[in-house]
Amino acid sequence: MNDSVHIVCPHCQAINRVAQDRLGDQPKCGSCKNKLFESRPIDLTAANFDRHISKNGIPVVVDFWAAWCAPCKMMAPAFAQAVETLEPNVRFGKLNTDAESSVAARYGIRNIPTMIVFKDGKEKARQPGAMSANDIVRWIETQL
Image: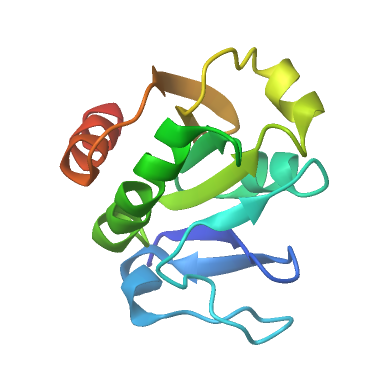
């Protein structure tokens, strides 16, 4: 029998069960029919953050950032490039710490950008500071 994982839809937040070996086949949400992976980070908010962190059966990497932060702007293309390399085995999300200060405070975000790898709903690793795409991929791979 094929192992399956739960994937939260970035559009409607429905939880989908997907066969692990079919993650790369561009699976679609059973509820809204949109793609579950779109080769870009998803926008996380206070409303959807906990669902994505706790219900996804794959690791979730969150970039905590702010619009005024120059290093955050510098790292954004590198983070997007890392998505193209590691998705669909890793879910990538971005959380604006100014707009969602309650989530940022809950995780003690003091420096931005800060990336956190979550697995099974728990923080597994944290990395502050801007990084290149290759460094992001390498760092994530060492955490998996």
